[in-house]
Length: 248
Image 1 (tube, rainbow, N blue to C red):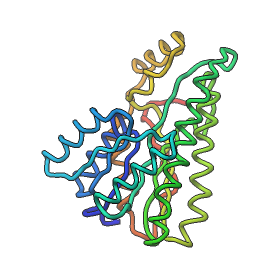
Image 2: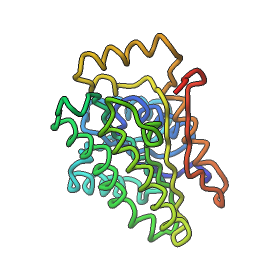
Image 3: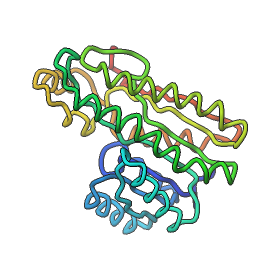
């Protein structure tokens, strides 16, 4: 895909991988809709992108609320007229043993990591189907390939994202020329650790930073640009991105 002039929706754009990817896309000439709940952060990022010569708009959006997602997508369509790229990146990773019964955290992960992605796909797909082109990128994880103690529900949501992404690709790529990519990072420096309420697991995750060099959000952004810029007949269905010294 030629990126200049294209329009992208990025969820979870207020920090981490979402913010880094939005800036990278803007650098390549993409008009970016920055979607998340924290409007103040989004506006600051939009101002930064616009000041650098890019084109971005802040969109307050709660991906767990279908009406909020629909409103956000309509705002993007009104601003730029179309949607070419949807990067479903919003996610949470509170770690705890299943026996701890942090049920509220379980439901929140399902709501954001899985239902939020489904809500966004449902909102952007009609536009892409009508124009018979587009690229949907979904953030899964190494936890969408492997399983880890403490990540029972998180792994379940990310396995679901990987499976849904592949079936979405099978259904929409040949019929509507819409490419689908599942991005599966290993350890990345991000705000995900801040969601961990279990003190023991929070400490373990912080200790991992002393054992390996984590990926940066910009590394994932570069990989996403790589997938987007592939020739139109090439669909990079999965990108499994690992720190070189991550042993698991």
